[in-house]
Image 1: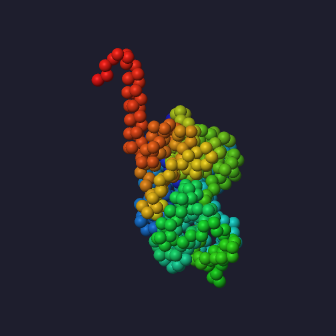
Image 2: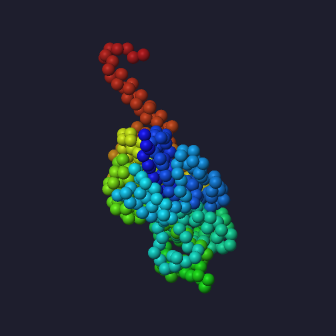
Image 3: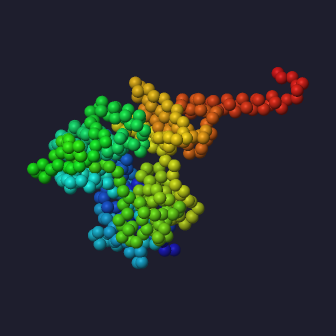
Length: 431
């Protein structure tokens, strides 16, 4: 029987993971064609920072080498960007004129970095940090220049700053929010993190608003000026201020987009059931996920439907964040900020570099923020995800899974013994 044709637009982690899952369950169902705008095969974007820091090479972070595609009979087009989707003829068209017909189309176009709309954003030496080409540019710049400014104090910005510092540059991190990594950490944990990074040599401008990137006489950026009139020198400016779903191709194709390509629980676009979307470009129930775990969960469900099994549903992801920022362990999950109607249990030991905050509501754990010691992060996340009552564990919860679960078991045993005693006849002998 003639195979159906599957075209994948985007050769990143989400699209490639969907193919891996599909090949497990239906290896012979499709003739598969993959288009990637970059000239490299699929690599682990999470590990770009170790490449920048000199800890790994590009070859070491490749996930699916070219030989993998060939071994599975997949036609791979590298360095070809799809610029048009003809949904009537069911054909995609690349920027070099290459065409490929499809019966099913998978969009995994990822996201685009947000570039601050300030004067000087197009100067030489100003880049966004998104791919391996950006990483190589920073490595080369560090060999010949001294001052770097990273705009954005999230995970990506801090990793970029640390890598550039290890390459010998003097680095200033500019963050408009009141504290670093405000989406993953509360203020106390963020201040501990900032202090640790300052001790290593990084500089920070917290709450600063960038007004202008100042040009030198050679047309290269030479400084970053802030709204208060101050400025810092900069031979290199790295924009790491967040990303936006890449929906340009989907919008041009007439697919409904709203903060991403809108998809159903089967990862099919609401406009055209022949077209699927996964990863950072997809908006599911109003959310576009940027973490790896949700993207892989989407990939599994999407592959299930592409394989014509039709039994999987993606209903969203409850996310946790476990990170190692320049060697410092961090973890957060749920409503770790707390607020009205919540109670906080806090352990703080700045001398040892350990901070733990657990947030309770209605007898359940609803949030956790850990700095320095994240060994029990997965345990706390399980309690949050499953909505486990923690009354029997409460006094021992801060000290980790072993003690908390032992306390819960002892409480249950005590209840059982009380019940047995109450059921004995009044004259029974208790031995």
